[in-house]
Image (cartoon, rainbow, N blue to C red):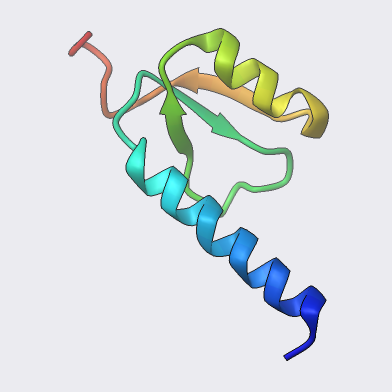
Length: 70
């Protein structure tokens, strides 16, 4: 396995784990062009989410699963 492929795989697994761990926070990020991807709902504040998506021109929304619960 090439070193680049191994690093890419590690990053993909880490990103998935982080997303799953924070799936119940108040704000969700969706990166531009990822309409089929699940939302990354790992942000406690809108500011945290916006900082993450700013480079990819994504957007942040309230977690649809948490509406009315917070």
